Image (cartoon, rainbow, N blue to C red; front, side, top):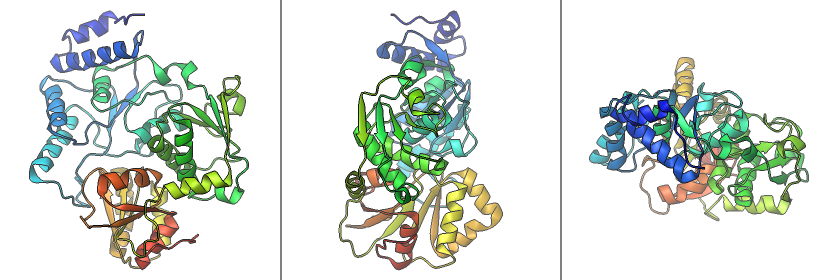
Length: 417
């Protein structure tokens, strides 16, 4: 079925709201045709991943939209940029790259986007309603939005996200269509130890395994007897979206579109049932580390997705006023930073040796020192997946408690509660 634009959409594409909005609408319409979408649908909000500097073309694109008078038509929050504009941390970008990255961030603000600069907008007050259609970028934000909030979005890539936000529309295909949200794979964890499922380390490990097993399909986790908390689901989704291409998962009895297993399956027979075993978990955990038998570490990095206020409280309690031997980079957004500053916790953490990274993170911009054969420890499945290629650091995976003890001693420490 060929794409049909409404008279209003045709008018926007023809310049009724200016050349910037016309360009945005033409991009959305062209994408819809490529994807075979029959129509465009109005969206309630957007989360913009395209403000991270990857080259001059991205900056020039955003500035072109701004020069054309474009403004977002819906609420649009911003994902991480390449610079920490709060001054908490410093990076090693060259002057030209730094200047273009700043111009890019400024251009998106000119377009009317909120300067949230976080990959966890759902923990900064941007929580679209169950069943609402949105256009979100950033893989962990997309999977959380779809799965935990029950809003509907596809994985909108750089520049298409802002085009949707400016036009106010998105192509009607993929996860916007209710039938495509049906779980086809059961990921059964009922055979695993309850103590493991209740631990912090479980969720990145499970998410990494889920992503590799499910790929870009929709799966439902079965065998969880209570809500593990949003931070656990955040970690699971981020790891699954990094290891695979997961845009939506369900947890039976926990997530909003899965009050029970049958509902998640839309009362149909699953295509595959995966019985997760202890050996599968051991192998999944092993994959999260790229360094074996390291005697020392050079840094610890946590906060991908960005740390919540609750996670900062736990970090402070684990450090307990001790001095760290190696720097611990704690990545988060301004929403959490404001709370840290008002409570005095930022000063306490920094006195211990924590380097708070706001507006960005250590995996997307060069903040970590350039050290040959360096080793990074993290509790993030997403960091574990991307850090070796993006930073050059080898990775060791552990719990937040293990990461803190390792930062205190300067060597890998395991077994901390």
